[in-house]
Image (cartoon, rainbow, N blue to C red):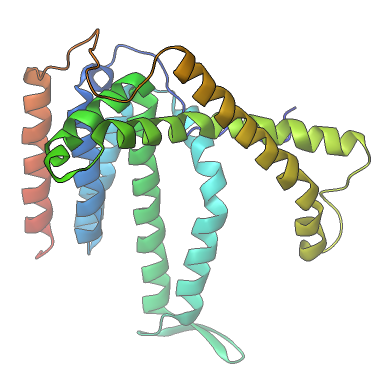
Length: 268
């Protein structure tokens, strides 16, 4: 069994679902706006609406639910840590439990729950973008969205390519880390016993070969792109032209309805 589970972020799952057929520009704008309006939620009704929309998105994507849940595993520790800080240090309401100088109060517990839920919604919606959009479509979509900023000197193509390559190399570097850890274990390294400080120190021999491998892969990619005549975005043509369909129009209408519904439910 693999020492590290391959991260879901950066992976693409081929399919023919409604989300797969949407224009990448629509998905980028929809998910970016959705991530912003998540912070407007302030009560159970607004969070209920966001959970419903996210659940519908997961269903329409056609991506197996177990893959979504596997992608949430790496962030659970961060969520628990953040929730713990809110439970212990956010004060207000009735005191539910007293632990010496520390108290767990009603407002802190509620805040921890809402923050954790908000973080989960952000992670799931971010995963849906990469799971239903290939790296080529993602690059084209981001480049087209950034193209108006070329007039002020923004390198739209280079930025889009950089972000796409970064997402694409997350699973690759994770797999490389897994191989290095296995090699270190075969040489007698111990990553599981001792104190937390000792276990963290045991990962130092993993970081050095990982950085060397990352720089080597970056150099190989640069040489491969140069050998194929890559000279940036100037004068480049595309095999597939992006075009909006009625599905994209329905997605924008749905986004508008979500925003209006969220604003109305905030005052209920």
